[in-house]
Length: 281
Image (cartoon, rainbow, N blue to C red; front, side, top):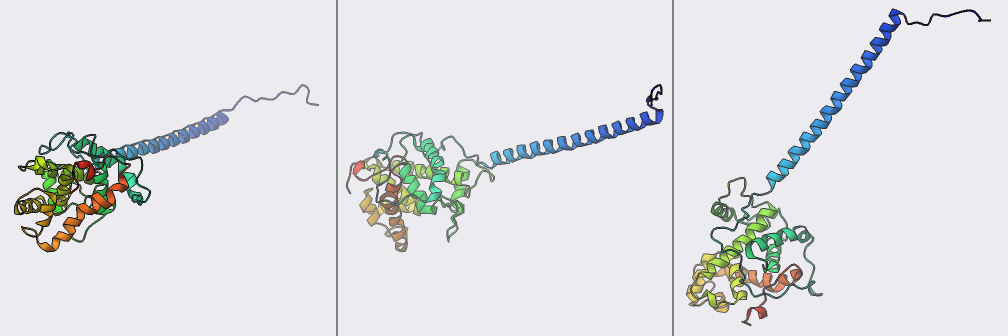
């Protein structure tokens, strides 16, 4: 029926124009979407980079070098080897302790050496703040190490930290400052004539008392006692510059840390024990 008939299917100018306009529209839409997605990707990349930079800048620029007033790490403490786990009758450390365990170990080993008494420092953090970075005492001490503002400012000036680097509320800063301040006190006590006769337990006991109540008070009591013997200096509490009403807290501070809390952290590192220090007093 249709044999012999032909059809002209060649595009007309109008049809070609319509096809060209449609292709141009598709191309324009594609380019617009490509620009949009590239913009989104670039924005995400920039935001991620900024987040990384902010995180890095938030980490305290605490001097990794030892303070000028602190001697290099040496073997200074007679300790018992770390146990595999705390005694069965000891409560577990607070949950918050696990998060900061290795940060404390790293800080302690940096300042005190590989034989650092980590168990003492861990017990001290528990006593000070219960491992709570946001802790604030009724007298204004802040952070894990419970630094008073004046003490934190003095510590930062000694280590040439600027205002942005001085972060007593920062957990990492606070843990490093705690073990560093302990070491500074330890060294200051070691410079007192006759300190070479002190056993490590008594010297750490004096260090903790000084951290809690001030090195000046402890030294005044040692002069009043006429001795560096731990029991004699403790008995002189309240007879020098310190008011007697503060003695219960100050004497109880090392007692709770070294006797009650330290065994909980036996698996964390070396301990300082009375029997292991060469004396039973």
